[in-house]
Image 1: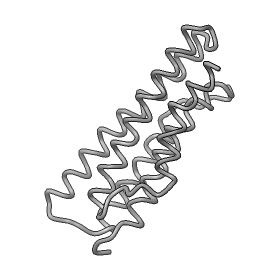
Image 2: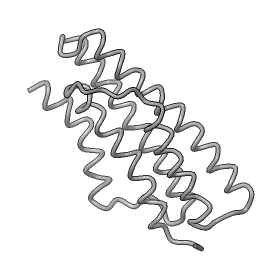
Image 3: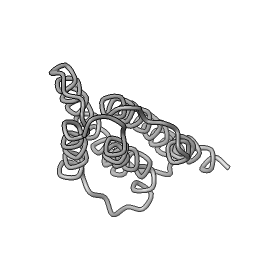
Length: 146
């Protein structure tokens, strides 16, 4: 029962995202909304990781791996948000200005985050990974000058 509740903390926001909740009407807003979604997914993953550790579902190594991953995601998200804001403040509005930044965020996490073959850890982090990958899709499909 407890596992189901913990997983629902992560899955419900993701389902809302996939169900068609608008991420933004233009590439800038889609980027900022995507960054916020990633932050919320990280927050949920932290809560789940802490609960799993408290009840003994995660050991010290699993907790450390999740923490390292979430730290990398947070650092990459800060850099992503700063780049998006800089491009926006420079007056650029098109998808072509924001899509490389979104793709860079995905690559930042992929190239820096620890890889875990532990299924428990991977399952907790899937929602975060999905939120990250959805940013490029949201930006690419945003309205605005190409």
